[in-house]
Amino acid sequence: MKHLVIIGAVWPEPTSTAAGSRMLQIISLFQKQNYEITFLCSAMPSDFSFDLSIISVKTQAIQLNDSSFDSLIKELNPDVVLFDRFMIEEQYGWRVMENCPNALRILDTEDLHFLRKAREVAFKQNRELVFEDYISDIFKREMASIYRCDLTLLISEYEMQLATETFKIETSLLYYLPFLSEEILTSIPSFEERNHFISIGNFLHEPNWQTVLQLKKHWKFIKKQLPEAELHVYGAYVSEKAKQLHNEKEGFLIKGRAESVVDVYSKAKVLLAPIPYGAGLKGKLFEAMQLGLPSVTTKMGAEGMNGVLDWNGFISSDENDFIEKAVELYNDKSLWETAQKNGYEIIEKRFKNKLYETDFMNRIDELKMDLKSHRNQNFFGQILQHQSLQSTKYMSKWIETKNK
Image 1 (tube, rainbow, N blue to C red):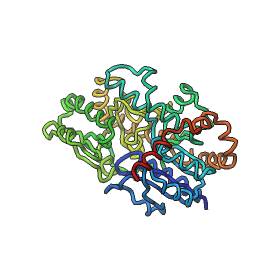
Image 2 (image 1 turned 30 degrees about the vertical axis):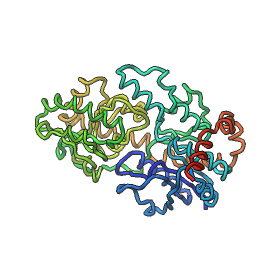
Image 3 (image 1 turned 90 degrees about the horizontal axis):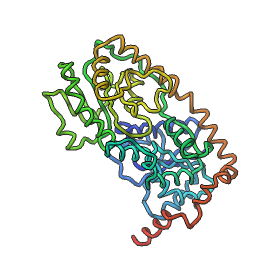
Image 4 (image 1 turned 90 degrees about the vertical axis):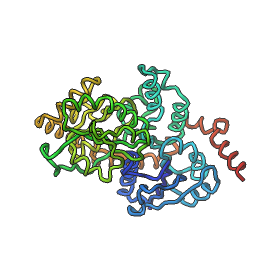
C-alpha cells in the first residue's frame, strides 16, 4: 500500500479553522487512492483537535530539532510527504530529503503567507500595496521552501497568477487545489424562516479580528435601518478585547465558538464579511455558498472564488456601499434567492471534488514516475539544497546539540 506522511503545523481543527477543514479534504483525496496515511505533529493537541483515528489516519507526536525524527521517517518510508505550511518544510524538509530521498515532497501553503503579510503591512499603514511590500523575509523563506519541494499546492487562482506571472515560478512546480465540496445542502430554511446577520472567523487569525473591527464600524448604520436585526459574531478562541465589543443594546453579539456551522448558518439571513486584507480563499464564504447563505463581502473576501460568475450576494466597493447592500439583501426576498442560487452555481462549477481529484492524483503519479528528471529541471531547488544554503538544517543541529 502507498504511504503518505503529513507533517502538520498543528493538529487539524475543522470546527475552528478553514485550514483544518482543508487538511481533511486532502486526506480524503489520498485515501480514495488507497494511501495509508500517518499524521505527525510537534504541537500539543487541543480540546477541539479532530480525532484522526476515526478516519483511519495514524498519528504520532514528534519533536522539534531532534534526530529521533530521522529514525521515524526512515522507518515509515513514505512514498509522499506533505508539509503543512512553509515553516514545517523548513524544520523537517532537509531531514526528509536525507532519510527518504525518493519520497515526493509536497508543500501545502494553505495561503501565501508573504502575500497576507504584505497586505497587512499596507493596511496598517493606511496605503495601497506596492511591490516592495512583497519582498519581506517571509517572502524569501516561503519562496525557498517552494523551490525545495517537488510540488506546491496553491489554494487560489489569484495566487497561482501571482506566483507564475509576477514571480516566474515554473508551473511544473505548482498545482491549483482550492477548497473542495462533495455536496450542497439545499434542504434548508427559507428566506422567511431566517433572521439576523452573522459573521464567523477564528479570532486568533488577525484578518478575522480586523474584519470584526470593520463590522463594529458598519453595524450602527445597518442597525439604524434595520432596528430589529442583530449581528451574531461567531469564532473560536474569543479574545478579551473581542468580548469587550459585545453590546446587547446595539444588537452586536459576540457569540464565540459555533458548535455547528450548519445550524448557525441555516438560521441567519445574511453573512457579513468586510474583510480588509488576507490571502488564499475564505472558508466562511465557501461554507456560506455550500449552505445557501447569501453574503456581502469585499473584493479581498471574494478574491479567487467566483471567477466570471455572479457572487452570491454583493461584493462591496466601499463602506457606504457595504452598508447599503447589506440592508438591500436582508430585505429583498427575490434578490436573496437569486444570490443563493448564484452561490450554488459557484460551488458546482468551481469547487466540486470531481473537477480536481482525478487530475490531482494523476499529477502525483506522474511526478513519482519521473521524479529524478523533474528535480533536475528544478535548478533553483538544486541550488538551495547545497550545504552552503542550508541554514535551517545547521541551526536545528546546533539547537539539538545545545539541548543535550
